[in-house]
Amino acid sequence: MIQAERVDWGSLRCGCGETGAHMPGTFARLLEAGTSSEIAESTLEGHINIQSLLFEVAIPVTSLIVAALQEDLSEAVRLEMLDHLVTCVAGESHWTEVEAGAPEIEIDCQIAAREGIWTLYQEYATGRASMARMLLDVVDSDRERFEYFDAKLIDRVRKRAKRR
Image (cartoon, rainbow, N blue to C red; front, side, top):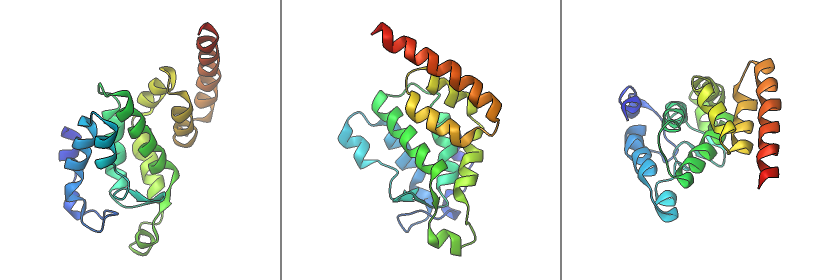
């Protein structure tokens, strides 16, 4: 993924205790995972976060996730990506990150996610409503836009459910 090449991963702190140098490979394996066991083996948990406490690598990984959501992913991988994105934007800095001078990693993750705001709205509109809505509620700083789209998309989701 070209987006990953822009980052000096070796200079970033990772939840596993190493530098973030391995993150592009870990992320690529997750994108290519075909089974639930492959997804579990290449999870970002323990790297970007430990129990919703974030590490520095979460910031550029947020950008990677938003970019990856524009790709043709399996539904299981897409849901895993959205779940990790929720963690990035709604978590908080690990105490070691606070001590290292990064007390608000989640704010930087929210800014990174905001760069793909329309990708998140697309996720909301195409059936992954609950996770995408949660993300947008945190990420979209334009409350008027969020409330407008939220009302329209909730109505669309209800109509779709009635047809089933």
